[in-house]
Image (tube, rainbow, N blue to C red):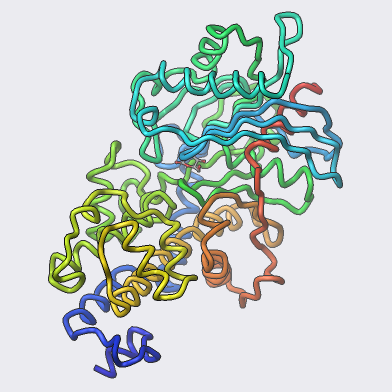
Length: 467
Ligand code: BGC
């Protein structure tokens, strides 16, 4: 028993929480399946780098490396007020953003609303009706005027993979993050939004269609010239960085090769061909039961939407083997996606007695303190793997671009709210890039890009309108 305790790192547990030998064996197996040691991390990052090149070279690769038509970083002198809409995986945020130049915090007036489940799995007209309604309410409430002769300029952040051939259009390639709305894939999302706005007599012109990662990159650069990458570790997972047109062989454009172009990597799709990621049976179950099996392999192992679900599948498995909640009714726990990543954050920051109550209100299951302690350990296993994988994509971009120092501007619920994600991520990045981690002094380190999607859309709109 002692050996098992020490191999699981659980020596400090009080004896009354000692788990049964079968339980410890199951835990040890889970730890083994989810562990990604430093060598494996390096192999994953190396393959990631290859996929970055493949995606820039040809269409149809795992990483679609989308050209965003954002040509360069802001100067920091962009100013003005802009309407922005950010349609993410969980919320829609409509903002009125006033830029005053580098050195002055942008002023943000915003309205955040939850995207209803019916919209996420409904029809195109419901989605765009919902988006146009949200804009309409905001514009009225704020008394913003738009007329045919003086339309409002809108920066639209749409955080799904789109193929763009200019800043103002983009065809949705596939839904991600559990969205499954009919009639949008293959279509230009700007035309669809325009139509819904016109139907409401709203004179609003989309002047920039952007991804949330591009937003984070540009918003952060606006304030901080050391920004090198924009990333989202939230419901989904992805990053954007700056290339030169000449390094994007698949792009047919008359632009000179040294023209800068922000690239939205769409790296949630890394390893869709299953060459390197150590998928567990739980990852396979998530994929199989998702609306788009076979897609977003990396995202399904590392992003916020899925971490809670991986954890739920593990504890259901423990229950099925008689290792947890023996006499309890687990019918609520058996429902997919009942546990979200916020609970995993709580497991690593709250006290055991509080967690018993929280877990019961989420799942209807009355767990013992010892069981909650086991849940905490399982949560650590799942989120540690998520954080370590999240470092691979960023390390790959740094290696490809020869970036040796700078700031990775990050937004998203996992990075912002999980208590240990950032430190685990920093440790993994250091292991791949071969330095000793000291978060404050790491040459490449994560900085917050809160509200990056909105501010980035405003800055890009300003950059575009100035030309
Ligand atoms: C989307 C990306 C987005 C990421 C983070 C992914 O599911 O495909 O476009 O940047 O989520 O929101």
